[in-house]
Image (cartoon, helix red, strand yellow):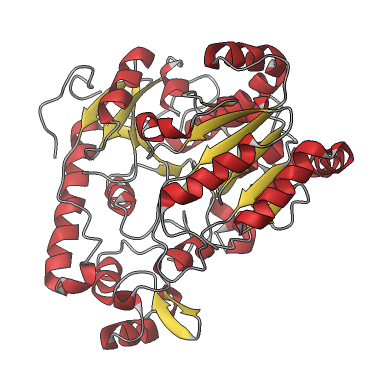
Length: 460
């Protein structure tokens, strides 16, 4: 979104880096290369984690301080719009959205992922601190029933009782706490008709959903049109033989397996099975793409004959593949949109319903089932062609490949900022046609510190 907006004459995007993380320096370098301004913004940490062990007054103070810092950022930068990638309870986005609304600044969520209540329930359903075994959770669940959900016969809260009360008292609570991107934001962009149905079924407010498409849809479509040339160039770069179909395997990060029907205890043990079975595929090249949390050097041991790690982003690799393997990943929807058969190897037994109705996605939970379906897809031509045909029947619902995704997103930004088609603000706006500052927050706002190389130079 920032790269899109920096190409216009009427907006100046500003990326907000809100906390330290492993790839921060890399992402700041990306901003410099794209000529996108950025700033570091530090506030008190999000009071999540062990919020159940904190007192309600302490949480109220912590959240109020974060809200104050968000208000200060908005006062200093004077944005026309806040753009966020996600919103869910306790992640920090709500403070930005509330501070923006207090200053008359709208906000929009441009989602990067796909998730409904199942993902949160899978993650927190076994958390004792969120369960009705804690008496305060039982009371809060009765007072605010939308925060509760039954899991194996027990009530579970989306957040611990003290944090639920603090969010409710400060007006930071979402309408549907268990649903990602159920938010007080003014709009949520939707990438495809299939995702629109998904959000509707999940109960998101219809009046906030805007079918715009997504920028990665444009990338997928562009790469798909040049797939043969790009694939051979990738093979040459990785030292793989030319002319073979590509089996793309997405390696997920380790997650907590307690309480799950998981076949493996060690993450590396599962990765070995994931890759070894793919390497046994017939006359295929196997390319591995890594979750951003997995450093390439830590996965180098998985490379072997016919198997290489690619460092390109996943969206530029998926359209090059003839078969895609992932683990309950949001990226599966990209392969569906490209008409590419998929294997969803759900080794953690999450059993999300996201792609259950998609005929070209095969769901497996064990190594034996994974090996079986992979063998059939890579050696049985008739079986593979049936899978590809089934995927082709539904692919048009999973992406907008009309080349107008950027145009629709800019039109939404203009509408939220009160800018007409000529790029001017309506008559009577005190700002006239001034350049609009566009704060792009990452969902975890964190006070202003001395900027490093490449930050925004003062107020815009």
